[in-house]
Length: 178
Image (cartoon, rainbow, N blue to C red; front, side):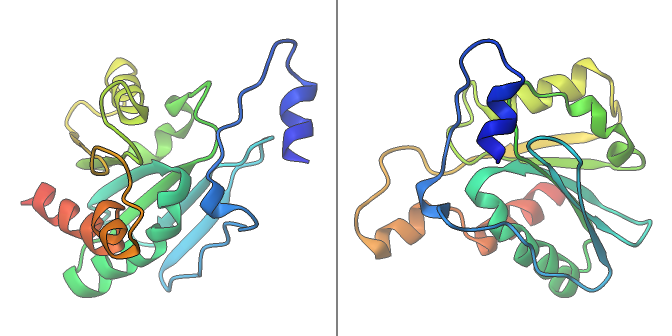
């Protein structure tokens, strides 16, 4: 169904980047008390997890496999550190129009873009460039974080140190907010 909706409306080639680890998974984040989960109505839907509270400290923007960690990150931030965060999970990263989510930027003082891969010329570069170009938040502090650089180890134990965990993401956010 997703592939049909992508290819029917395009006259040229379509490139779909997949995460093989997530084959067969359906992103259905667990409901967190005090948060609402909304899905955009698009061919390839985006997900917004938004606190039902006005004092949001940070907006997290991400995509891909790392998105499965987000509910745990939001819970840990809220319950362990009293930090309220919203999250925008993008499914379609090209063409990217971050401006369509301008409402999420109102009142936000910090934005963290979670990069699944290398930060050089990556997803986070484009997101942050658009935020600056569209003047979505001139008083907002911007930050990005990436995965480790290099080949993913074949050892499960070493892989855990390489791939982002909810705990490492929370640590990055706490360091950023200092």
